[in-house]
Length: 206
Image 1 (cartoon, rainbow, N blue to C red):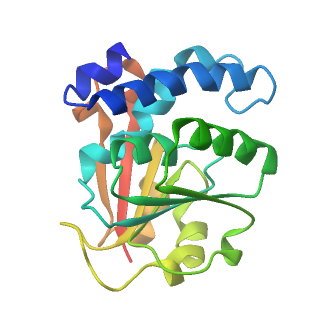
Image 2 (image 1 turned 135 degrees about the vertical axis):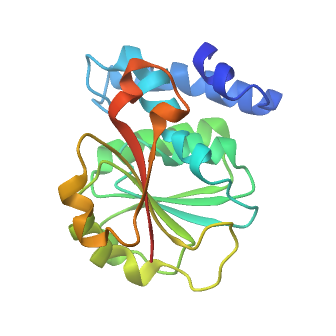
């Protein structure tokens, strides 16, 4: 919890407890199901939980906001964000059932009432959301056509509704098509660990 507390010193006692708990639960699950690569599980706090919270540094979601986490795997970035934003609802979707089993158990153990989970493809998702978030799921060219129909028209937040992705590396080719609209925020502006030197939040209004 040391790194999370360093960047988010104003967490409530409940949030502190929930973040501490997931730092215990994921390694326990990882012994049974490979949710996070074996060599990376020791970096859970910095490379996965804190990385998910990078979205918080970009936009502060208002209560009542609805978020779709597409390709959530074992619950990233959706579960850390749901802990941080108890008054925002999160719908976590993935095609890999065994990873969602982990996400569901963690949601249940943390008693996160603001999270729902769906096993399936994005084409099966119904309803609309203020934002779709994803963490290194697929290139923007593939993602945008899949999620455009899911973005609500009414606006609740300081930035227009759209797509927020956590990505790394050189994105110049990937964002070229959207260069007039896309906004890229370097997470190294906020987090000083080596991992964040190439990590970015990519925002595209839709």
